[in-house]
Length: 149
Image (tube, rainbow, N blue to C red):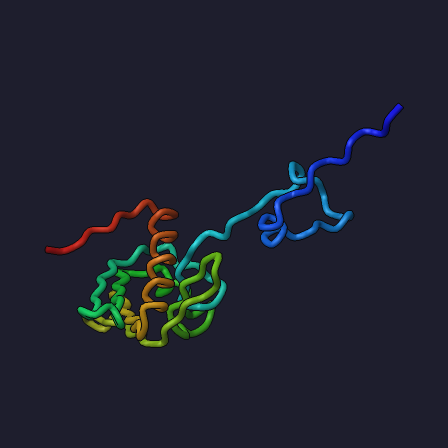
């Protein structure tokens, strides 16, 4: 009786894109991949539930752009005395954190009314990264994108 034939070798190109799994890992069916929800935060680790109005501008050559966020009556106004000071706007997602410190609180009759933030993108790489974040954030929050004329 002959031994069974050896299984065919995997294509060489596929080997370059795969990583050998250690024997201690659970089978694929037992593992779960959890995607981090995208969020905006004024204090690291504390998600802001208020959804901002976002306006984008981009240079004609695409090399730079600006995102302006307006949070009307954000929840952070209620909790900031307990949680600490606003240190910036942190945009968190699976890829990491995008941040800006250009954050201004606006007051009406001595009471906090809104927070305005600006994030300046100085390269097409930063623009693309920001747009990936906004696509995730919009999907998580059920928002849409509308181009102006």
